[in-house]
Image 1 (cartoon, rainbow, N blue to C red):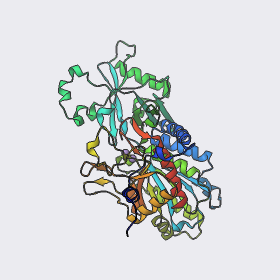
Image 2 (cartoon, rainbow, N blue to C red):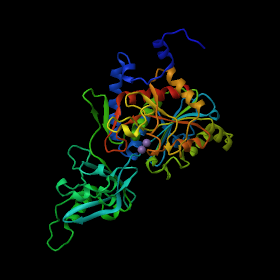
Image 3 (tube, protein in one colour):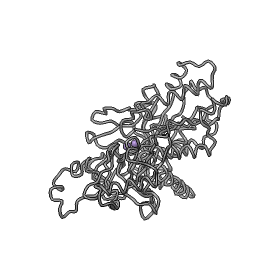
Image 4 (cartoon, rainbow, N blue to C red):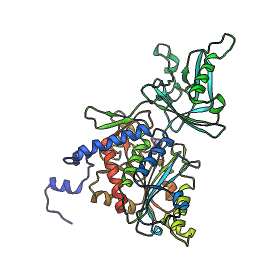
Length: 476
Ligand code: MN
Ligand code: MN
């Protein structure tokens, strides 16, 4: 095929460069971008832990007409297309469904994200006294760089179930009036030995102990009076004793709210954007789906950061069981085969974050294949490490289907990979859904400082991801 064009025209026609999404939007749209991100920042503040995010998603879903699955069974409500249903997974994950016109057997359009983020958990027997300080022992959760967690204000988010079965949700450090907590670091003056260590060893896991108090209980005859005093405060305020920590779940996260970043306010800085960036955008997208052709599903899971294990992680049978429940309510002739077909015929966006090109660390990225902050929603054909080990590696047919949907809907998108070959790697929930035979591709927001206490996203990417997810629900 010969084209009668000059070089400039030919170049425009044949070559490809990803577009800066800020340059692609028009008129009022940039106001829409900023407004959308106000809601996103609130979600980051209200959902720092998987439990809080689940609660917030269910609250918003209920406000938008979603009803709990168990109430449908209890009240023998008949299932009709357009119905909005949610299924809570132990308060640590949730699935939202908008039932489609088409038979479920033909498959669903699923967007799956995760609600857990790297953090420090309290150990089960955490409180001790050392040098007249009350201290808390922690155990880190997920992939953290330990040195990032010292000398910053921390908050405690937890749940304690009393022996009477009563549940106490405890959050300390998020209200302006609250105290915060802190892990110390050595002053440079005395850090000669520490500074010679490898970064992975300069701060150790067992060294991540939290300053929790320093006033002794007034009683001459006792030892460990500072520990007693903090226990006394905890008992007075929250009714809990030391033994209650052994069965509680306490998560330590950076204190404070998400903020605008940059003089142009183009970015959001905040904790837990991996993966709240994808959770919030998929939530907002499904809220606007009214009567889809295919059943739309927004799936929010826990434990992704530690391998998707456990009964609230993607490896559990929760999602499959919920599909069985819905099928059973829908169809008097329930059969396992129909459930298997519904799963196998589904399309999935595995909604997770990726590392964007960082001008401070260009050496770990292949600039031609790295995603860029501000260049829209990122599609990721493969993740994994070394020779794509552990990767879902989406097929060309499905990638093209998603690309076509994005192009048709003017979604600014980019194809990205996770860093240079042999530089490291990682994975998502993609391969677990693919195991059912579903078509799956990773697709979400690229961030800077992923897994840091404070991660950075671009507001235009958050918005484009929401738009992209919406187009997927409507057209896949
Ligand atoms: Mn993630
Ligand atoms: Mn992660």
